[in-house]
Every structure is written in structure tokens, then in C-alpha cells.
Length: 332
Image (cartoon, rainbow, N blue to C red; front, side, top):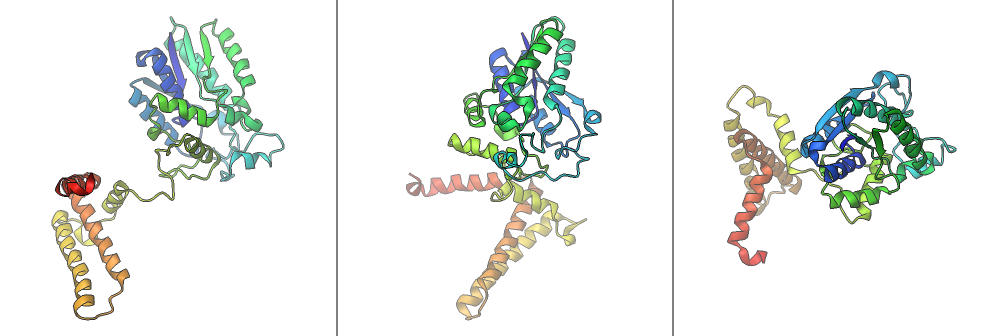
């Protein structure tokens, strides 16, 4: 038995990858992701990372020509903005029709394509085609090509049309997204590699329908979503990357390590001078100024680390380890 998982790089399809690998072994599983003209390629990047994580062969197809006539808000040519509302709110305005992010018959098209691929690459085997449709997507007719009825109908058509060789497997079709997360967590699915957001920003927006569903699913399981969202506190890795992208003009073309080291010494001196003037000279130096100078200290520290090839997070963790050994009574 072989399997191909229709992989969008999202939470649900990645759970299906985990299920298929757990059942059949990675040597019997492949993944397929599709470019259909979406506004960003974050999900395709994530699908590749998921395939690499599991060690399975990965295929990609381009269906953008078929979708170029649609005005679905997910597509590049659309003049519609992606709604930042929960699906339950969006459905109140649709009169029973699909939501604006429904890509016309996408799952029907993709499943037909993956069936053709399955017969081509596994001509001598029976094949299971996995897709990540779940009950929350089908609710209220938001995405009609995710319903149990749709799954049953297209599954029968593909089985018959493939000469009884390809079966559509939709293990999540009766599950809520929270139940999907619960199952995937047990299988140790790498949700940190996935992308669900309809926006293509560096971080997930946390406001579109799929982000809200995803966040709620983790919350209901008592878990924290491992991906980053806009509005989350900045991480040391992000700060270090940003510092690297914003070099001081005076350092360009020169010994940058020396520039950053001397700058660090100078900014530390500025902080000390602020404190001295307040404590010994009675000067009214605003605390906000000292805070700003400390920020400059951090910028130079980050860039010294960049020049030396150090990870700022590791530097801090190693320092914490040293402090715990030194003050072990405080860390019992």
C-alpha cells in the first residue's frame, strides 16, 4: 500500500501526513502541494519543510491558469480583501453560500489531480490519497467541498475511475479542528512548521477566519500554538535578525566588528554617565533617555554576536546556566 497526502503546509493536511507516515511508514508516503494563484507562497514553503521533516518525496503542481478567472479573495488577481472575522460571523452574511475564501471546487480539482499522480507514480500498487478536510470547514456550507457527502461522492468516483486502485482517505472529516490538534499532538506532528493564515506576512495575522479557528483549537486543548502571530512579543532571534538588517551607515565598508565593539563600549558609557549625573550631580536626566541608551547597548550586543557568529538566544541561555550554577540556592 502507498499513500499520497494532499499537503497545503497547513495544520490539517500536516496532521494527515503524520497519520499516513504513522500507518504506512515514510518510505510508502509522498506529498503533493498545489500552487493555484494564491496571494502568497508561505503554505508551499511549509509543505516542503513538512516533507523534509518526515523524509517523504514531495511533488508540486501549478493550477493557477484554471483559477485565474475567479475573484476569490485568496487569489492574486482578486480585488477583495481577506476578511478578519470568525467564520461564524462571516456565514451570517452569506445566505447559505460559501465564504469569500472558498476557492471554486478546489478540493475536487486537487483530488482528481492527486489521483492521476498516484496512478502514474505507483502503477503497480493500491494507493490511499489523504486529504485534511474537517467538520469545522464544512459547517454552514462555508466550504462545500469539505463535507462528508462530498467526500463520499468524490471518493466513489475516484475509486471507480482509477480501476479500483485509488481510495480517498479523509481521516479528519468528522472531527473538529480541536480534535485534529489533539490527534496530531499525540503523533508529535510538527505544527511549528505549518502555516494556516490567509495573509502572507512574516507572522500569522491572528485575525482571519482560519487563524481564529487554529488559535481556538490549541486553546481548547490547553496548548499554545507554536507559530508566531502578529502582536506577539518580539523574540531574541527576530531582534538579532533586525539588528543585522539595519547596520550603522558609518560601519559599511569598514571593520564592522571593531565598529560595533567600540560602539558598545560607548553606549555603556552613556548609560553610566546618565546614572552618574543623576546620582552625583543632581541633574534631571530623564529615565526615558537611559532606557533609550540601554536599547542602543542591546543593538550593539546583537551586532557583535552577528559578526562573531553567535546566537543571541544561546548567549543568554549559557549565561543563565552559569548563573544557576553560581547561585544554585536560588534555583532549587
